Length: 455
Length: 92
Image (tube, rainbow over the protein chains, first blue to last red):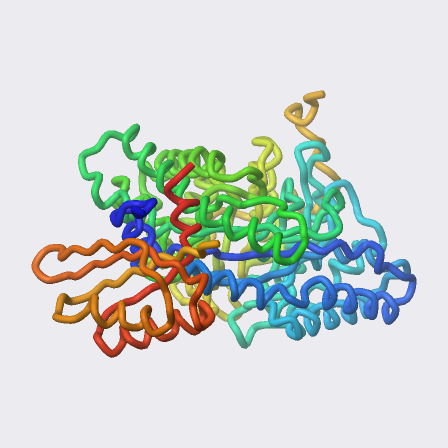
């Protein structure tokens, strides 16, 4: 009997895990809560709690068993639920705050790291319930630990709901204010989306979309450190060769996620939904998308060449990942959060990475303006205008974009915010330019672009 | 049916590594199917083993713990992983 793999292959896998932080970032169980909706918040809460506890009872332990069996860390275990705005017949701010508490305590009881779905999809307009949920977001995020919120305000098919964009500027400010003693950490749990996806396993934007089955397992892999290491050995190689090497490494990273997803869904008796092939960085040195761009040859991330290098990286990751998994979905691309990526935070502190350059880079990668600290005295209108810009990029390019931005209370350019853990730390970036107050005050809806008329 | 696990041992080369690790396996009735070892560079020792744990006296978790403990005693990194992770990653 001979080994079915060479010792080189075995050592390569072990090295990826031990030295280059290969891990499964998250296994996220999507749970449909539509059948829990009642006219009364108390009754709805009881149903929600019962269902989460029933479906997720073994989620943490099964994930631990898989970690042990394969020696691959699973960093987070999460739950995504039906957008909570759709769960109450009689909606009031207090009713939603009650549900936020129910969700938070159910997540704590199940030892779940984050629970997403405190959400509303309002790209075309608000129902009274959606409006009440959005108004409750600042209090909900300041009174809970694990609950994450998201609001979809735009889509290629619907255009941009500028009333919602204007409202979210105020909601983000208020959320920062209510969590001021922790640098506005509430805003780290809130995303504003264009073209939000229904099966995203990553936070803060995960929710269980209306097209999803009763329950589902979605997996998000990680692995910037592995890609960076592959590029260590590619000095002088052409960009075609670099892209090829990234593709191969992305394939291997993705296969691990595919294996974990299949096994976990089998154990739980729940459908395996999708694998999200995003490169998700962590604040650990070496586990950084910025450092990959530097290895490709960008002297300072944010400087000239950054957008092109990121576009190539994002595409190569998708090509490698798509072949490795039966069902790819979610956001699937490279993330460029600032505070969660030590290399990005450093480049921002040194002045190379600006808000304007970050916006350009989001047009070629997944997600958007992510985990960016801005001055605490930024007005709600300016925050709304930043959101509008990012939504426009998503809507016109038929892709998901998001804004997760933190107006750091009592802090200005050059100060740092510190959130700890996977959320990391980042310098406060200045915002240039004049006021867009008149633009935001107009309200209404920016019509869907021609790109949406593709039937 | 065989239940195959890959054991990887990494660290500074010294006398008795193979004997000590094999000892843990022997005590637990774990069969070694294949073994491969090399010394990389000056003195970095790397060993990969394919073992069958289907007749093991202890659970996989317990075996893994014993191996890791032995590794700590000898200042080595010892890992035990189900073979499927390597199949998934390196075979299409």
